[in-house]
Image (cartoon, rainbow, N blue to C red; front, side, top):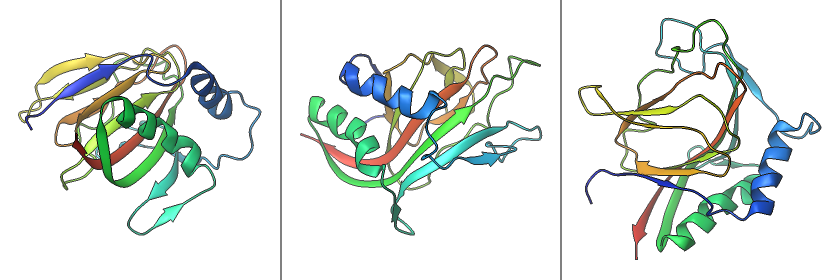
Length: 182
């Protein structure tokens, strides 16, 4: 299968879209244990602050009470796309606060893993912090704007980064997995 970047809107039922946003962004939930990172993009020379929460990791194995709830995103998406999930290797959430100083700050250009995988990136809310994709020479090839409920499905070998938001927080749920298109 050749490299791909696909965008899907309105795949996840509206009640779940609302539920994920309320759980993560309402400020009324003390159950999600966020880890503050002064630099969520470790390979940059500037600080790109934010929060992360790992809800599933295959190696070393870890899952928490929210794994099944968040994994519904991937299961619904894959069911609708006729994809059989072989293995989920990582499930995590990122929350970036607005960075008012410079709208052009971005995370490091990276891939999530050197192992062959796909990425399902789910946007929890509308924001102005685009996800940017690059070719192997780190030249920009595509930008996707966060939209509540949107899914970006792409080949995990494609380099990508996240622009900071200058207006409001940016929240994403990220899955790294392998599968087979039926």
